[in-house]
Image (cartoon, rainbow, N blue to C red; front, side, top):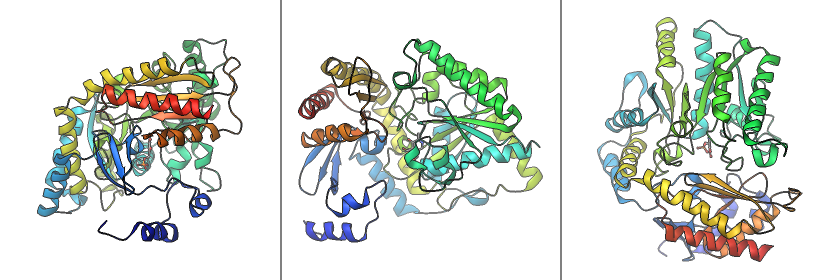
Length: 457
Ligand code: PLP
């Protein structure tokens, strides 16, 4: 190595680096995987010890075009040489930020008209919440402010977005201001449905629970509903059949805005450009991040419908410039990465690859694992899959405490050179590989998963 020795790096890491989402005590004791990743090519990453692993989680479901794409690296470098930064306040801009806005809206579902850029999925959802409140203030209905999300939804870990997230681990001990945020039923058939219900009946149940909550709170107090097209971090769970049309009907009935959080599903993960296209959603706001740049640079966005845009324009006329923005909104280097990334998604026809290899991966996982006594369900959509492990399959008994078995399976997979994720709540092994995954690579993932489950069981 040319830089500091591994020993130095590990010591500096332990002594100075505050890692996100990490067990501090275990890390200090050297019990975390603690990999220092140095390179990547296609679906593979390489670390300082020279180990190569197939990253079947695409970083954190974000490296959609795969690692090592030269055209994106070149676009960032070219823009850095030309102009590294200028802001976008007061109508200013840079070439790539405007070009990217046009590309995003060209690809967005019908009715969407403008895009606001941020840096992370969390800050984009914070923007959504502020826009929802702002719009209802402009419309003169200051009481209509509550926001409903779902248990097991994931929308970030900021102050309000952490509240929006419906996973207890992201609220506990932080005193988050849950106040205006309410959580409704998770559309999670395998875990939540009474086993006498069909999927369609469980979807009816979820819609009825939502309507009950709206009526109990008073429809005039509910501003918006926020949901991912399918639950991501909550367990990679596609909704039960018929769920979204029923939910949308309830929202329309009570004049409640729909915010679709497409941080994972945006830009191809389900084989359509957006998850909203896949499920036939009509959003008022869409959250985007991850796949927008395939994480080559941090960039997120809020796509605003024409209907809301008109209200925002009216707001500026009445109250002046909108008091919201970040120094790095539409940062030119990140926007340049976004432009090159969206071009690559088209050139490589990655959506078609998702439609072909995604079902192949899930089919192969199901074939290899469905009969295993620990495997309760294999599920997913597009280039997303999950294997849910259970203690007792016939009676659908879950492990208690959770997460021990899934963490062991994920580390047994890592030993076999494949990265999957032990999802944070439950015993669920998650897969979200780069969208360029081939059938041969899918076979490698399936073999490692089967071997790991057999080794642990
Ligand atoms: N929304 C969804 C659906 C996500 O999956 C995530 C991150 O995983 C976020 C929001 C938050 O994004 P970030 O981690 O970039 O803040």
